[in-house]
Image (cartoon, rainbow, N blue to C red; front, top):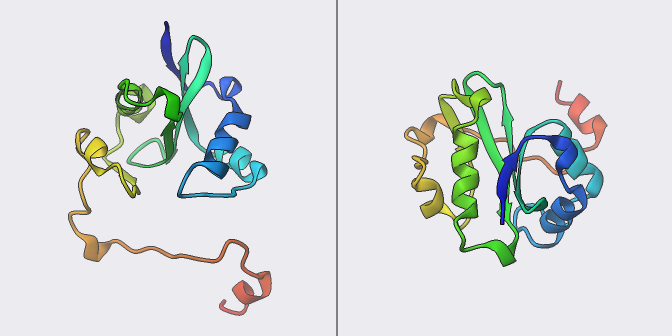
Length: 147
């Protein structure tokens, strides 16, 4: 069996990625396929392939210089427990285009121990971190009225 990792978008099984994210993930249940396609188009994506079949995925939103946010990391359930997620993380963190990144961020509900193995911690200065949560499709008029 051959395990490989690739950032070649043409190899991504978008149908599988969408099905997992929409039906099995806790972070984007019900996400539209068009949204998944747009996310892929605008991110650095990593596929994990076993004998040519995609079995895992991760993507980074990054400036390719200092910052990257890790999203949508998964290995299909039937392939978990084999170290594939760990190898995927190692491949991401060793990728040549990401060598200058000084700050990676991510969000997780249940994989803190996995990410801690790669140096991820809680924010050192959470008082400096902020977020803006908006409804999925805010009315355009409400955005204009704030300006």
